Length: 246
View 1 (cartoon, rainbow, N blue to C red):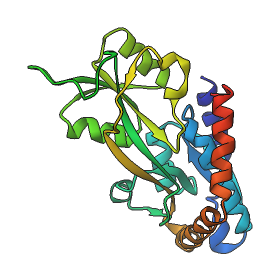
View 2 (cartoon, rainbow, N blue to C red; view 1 turned 90 degrees about the vertical axis):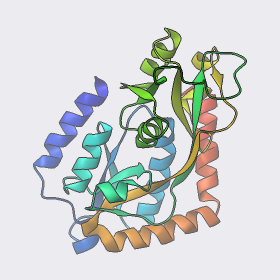
View 3 (cartoon, rainbow, N blue to C red; view 1 turned 180 degrees about the vertical axis):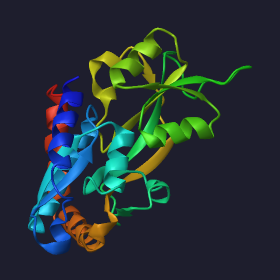
């Protein structure tokens, strides 16, 4: 509910403004980026991009929004960009330009109830039922590719409940740069299979009117990684996760 209130308030504020064209025309020095709430890796990505935008003389501001709506607002230009997505997003949203340097990397893991499991459960006469977080495209696509029946949830807590109550055979949960809901003690009752179902890279996307900005951001992100800034941000974020902030 809190996230929804934040979204509505911010959306009304942004709707009253002309679309930001910070880098394109120099009249604004702010960039508005859509983010998904309740995902630990969001914190690391926001911190990293804030530094990158600062090096380009821009202030990044974020708007919490549901995943699909965030993409649409970035695609139609009501926002300047979307925090991160897998690469296939580019084909589905033609008005989004990929920043051609990976922002984060991760893996998608299967979580099951069987404490002795080492591999994915075998499907029976019916497709396996799997819990996926709504809008986490890599999980949705993977479930579809494997012929599973997805049950979409609005939070990782709901995914946990579905698995705990036996409504699904497994859940697909991401681990991004070591940041994952699975680090919470609440998930200790389940088994996380040792090998990821799939590995992936996440890219930052901006509206196509910021094409020049995308090229500059790719350069800056490479610099931040080579300078160790990305590692520092990762370590700080991981420490906060261990301390129970998520």
